[in-house]
Amino acid sequence: MNIGIYIYDDAEVLDFSGPFEVFSTAKRLANNDWQVSLIAENNSPVLARGGYSVNPHYSFADCPLLDLLVVVGGDHTRELEKAEVITWLKHTVTNTKRVASVCTGAFLLAKTGLLSGKMSRLIGKINLSWLLCFLIST
Image (cartoon, rainbow, N blue to C red; front, side):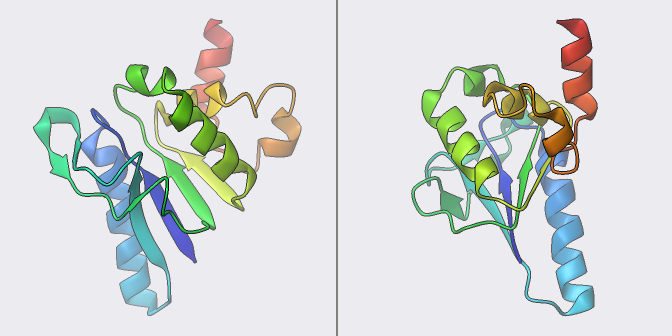
């Protein structure tokens, strides 16, 4: 199973390191063939919150097909304005079996427009806890 965790500048460290640790530990303990990867817009180091520098395994250009995409939270304001990011997310969500968000990562998923009017189809595919807060507040 290919698991991709989308990271970006000012992403919350715990939002991506927590899932990375859980999935990589599950891989080790279950001795399965999971591939757990960090994915960023490009191959440059990502400066997460607190200046924590992280090297992604893949960029949008060379990311393999995923079975699970995890979109992390953080200060995502700049990400919402990047057409390349929203386009990649939209394409990847459409072509991925399972999608999850951590915290405010749901706002990035909402920006794709894939959630509009399709809540019943996507509710099993996406963690909507923060998205529901967004919908209630708008």
